[in-house]
Length: 396
Image 1 (cartoon, rainbow, N blue to C red):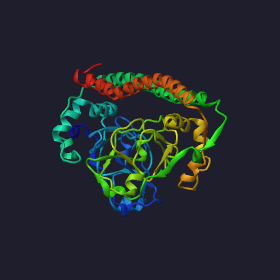
Image 2: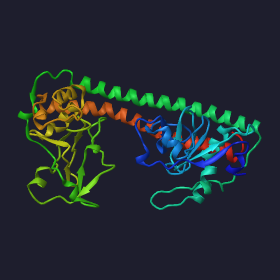
Image 3: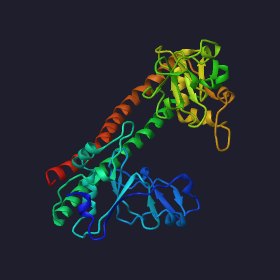
């Protein structure tokens, strides 16, 4: 059996509509459902593009009905499907196939889960095309074959899938709550660590360098070479620089290159967009530089750099750092705002003891979070396992 075989009795299988930018109108009442709305078994309801009713009629658009199955013909993943849950004036983009089932002997939920199963997707892979971005045509979707049990078995399988998915969703909610609690715990650790430091001085009086990266360094981008730290490499969860997605550059051999080159114990602060993200250069490693959205703070006493980074990461430090943020729609920090930020005056022994205590407590937190992240990453595989068992073996 194929998808074409299940659209009898007034059903439908067609592509969405080709809607160009010139056809769209923010005043329109017909919403355009897009690929971003199509989740793997869920309607994500993200898009906000519209056209007028007159344009929809002129283009002979296919209007969606509640209960339609929408199939994404582009990744990711290719062929994902969901049930359309809304009522009203809706159309969909051309890269989404519309499957409408009117046959009362077929449960649309069963078909949706079937399409999302590895059994169906393995056939999609056989018919996919494209090099840089895979796709599947509707004509090729129509070639995929599957077996269809009677309605009683369909309903039983759907009920069991949803029972197992519900349990999985509850587990995911618990894991996400745990992550939220870990974030609260991290701030509590930092708040406790810095609560007794009353004597402070401005960064201006405790540093040798406060500067920001140079503009226009995109022309120095390269496949290899020095590391180029950008705002996305700093986080709000800690002070370690995230090198998982790093740009490389071949820096200029001039004063600008020397000025923005990182040294061990430098503290980095984001000064545009995601204000107040902190990074710390922990040791001498690869040659590295910063872009114009990051400030480099180099303390006179480099041994206290890590202490200062953790302070700026804390609730106290963030409050002191961001109190002078400026701008309306586009917030930012100036270098003088950073220079005027007060930080604790501390001796080296106390600084080290404070850092050691923080990192000992947070290491436990990090270990738990790693376990939680691993479990969350496994949930998609578990969903696929449930579907695979349902449609490969006929029961779960």
